[in-house]
Amino acid sequence: MSPAAASLGNLKTRPSPSQSSAISSSSSSSKRSSDMGATKSKRSAGFITRTKDFLFINLVPLGTSPTQIPTNFFQLIIFHIYHTVLIFLHIFVSFYFLFARQYYLAKNNFLAFLYHHHRTPQLIAQDIKGLAKTPQHVGIILNYKENEEGGGIEGLMEQVADIASWSIGACVKTLTVYERTGKLNKLHEATYKVINRTLKSYYGETIPVVKLRTPHDKTVYPEEIVTEPDLNIAFISQEDGREFLVELTREFAYKAAKGEFDASKVTVDNVDGLANQLVITEPELIVLFGPKLDLDGFPPWQIRLSEIYYAPYNDSVTYNVLLRGIRRYSKCKINIG
Amino acid sequence: MAITSWIRTFPLFQYFIAWTQELFMSVLKTGPVPQHVAFVMDGNRRFARRRKLEVREGHSAGFESLAHILEMCYQVGIKVVTVYAFSIENFKRPTVEVDALMEIARTKLLQIIHHGDLADRFGISIRVLGQRSMIPPDVLAAIDKSTEMTKKNTTAILNICFPYTSRDDIATSMREIVTKSEKHELDPETIDESLLEQNMYTKDCPPLDILVRTSGVERLSDFMLWQSHQNCTVEFVNCLWPEFEPWRFGSILLKWSRSKAVEFRKREMERDQKQL
Image (cartoon, rainbow over all chains, first blue to last red; front, side, top):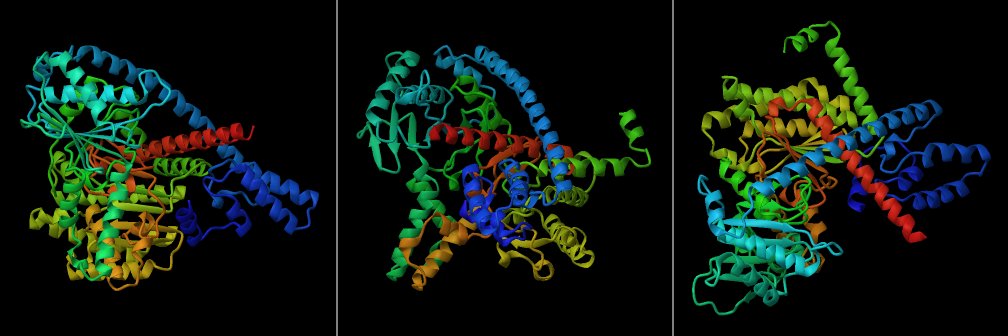
């Protein structure tokens, strides 16, 4: 939090330094009481000062900015009246979300029933038949769930296999799978087996060809492929996001310090070319399978024009979410400029 | 509806609305408040088309809406507001429109200078982020003057992204770092994320908390890509920017305030559990 706290310190705030050091937006109450101990010992610890400090500082809830700490008794009363109103508003919002969540869950379940793939590629092809355009490159964000049913590494592989089958049915050529911790990055062989097993249940004996790669490790599986693959899957993680750009800068800087590289060559197009070559190209559609819109560290450079789709309060990887994302993409108008 | 337009004709109605807004902001201030909010002001042209106005008037209506929203932001105590006024890609639009936008920018900045309305009342310092080399010289002069005039204000910051694309921002930051390394002013070992952030246009600003995009488009369109891809609430609102009413923004703030309060509470409980 240091850059935030430093910038807070730059801008004018009202309270004394001891208070502002004690309260920042993520400080703990124990830290607060230890800082209180420091200020107490600085002043003569009278009973009145102690109650005042208790009333004015410890009763202020977490997350309140330092400028809002009341400095006299009247302000304290007003503060707590307003805060009570805020708490009631929060409760009201929670109730609203309760009902909204039920609505969205019901809608998700209904759509899952209506648009079920039944493991038939023809049904998938039917679903996308009337669409004006379909994405060629889709990015998906998966969440690794450790202790849940259908979770763990096998759960991730099953999810990737399902999404791969639906994508092939929807004529998607490239799939980018983002999982923040990169659990699947080194497990190509096992993932390949799971994908092929799922594809067999969709296509029978002649299954489409799938090629897996991890840009960060520069690995490809299977290593020799005879025909052009029907689907290219790339596995990326957090290190392909900001860290990639930092690594690139570092490499340029090393070369420039040695005099082998001209700094004016660092342009948007050059970095773009390197990012597309070394990580992934720009996905046209990003589908999130979580309950809220959280990009979770997906590589920032490549998502400049990607349509972002998610189904609110959804927490499972289902075909209808992907289909709705593709439909949203087909309806959107992309004007650059 | 007839009833609402009848109520609007009551003499003190506007005053009552303003008073309610201030009260609501004071209530919100007692809880978690975002430090940095960004807006993509999308939908001015569609608004003009729907109401059969000229595009220029759509942009003016958009500016009015911006003034209302900025007032709300600074009332609730948001330190930094970043606004996407003009993209480098927008230079490809018809010359008439680009000229109209430049004209609006120039006149509004001059208005802020001459009257000092919003800026001095809330202590805002105005900064213009983006590729300065692409701005025509008269607009550049107005920008420099308004930046100079409001530099003394330290309470809040308004970042106007004009003209800006996030990729240009990141590439410029990288280029500056590489230039410094070339001149041996910087050790390549020390290059990390925070160094890149310190060289971007948004260098002194706290991390982005909320990004709001209007007009129902669900893309980032090269705005704040680096800042919004983690730990940031992205809200896509399904109305056009001139129609982005204060109550909509108020509900976004309330939702954010509640989710942050829940997060703090959870963190506190986890910490208490660990201590046990």
